[in-house]
Image (tube, rainbow, N blue to C red; front, top):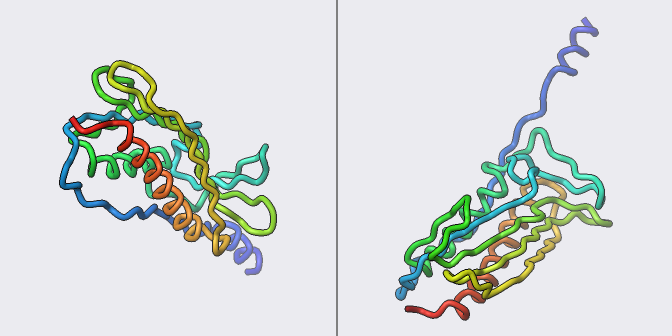
Length: 184
């Protein structure tokens, strides 16, 4: 009897929890620019999986087995950029290859994870952004790095923190693009 109870306890799996980001959707601007922009996004392999990543040290990354994002971090960031830029530009495409003839927003997602670097956990978002004109000329280059202190060590707090970090990062990029790309 005790043996069967121990076997049952050892075989039960923890509950799988799924988390998503929440970024407020902007209404279309009254003066949408008649310009096309392509979004090209790349990342390390672990960010193309839906599992939540937790950086234990600069050398070690732990991937959660039972806590997942509702989509991969790469897809969530692509969609967030697409939604945000759609309020400003006539056509926004997410592409897997670099296309000529349109503006190109090249994003390298480097970090999207929980980090323990002392007393309290934090969420970390890091991505490089390059904006290229249709002729291939680089117009803008920046690295966005956001570290958000989490209220709690749980993944719900991580989802809230990374949502706010991504919204801030996208707003910075939108502001820079608005200055660089003049309406036609």
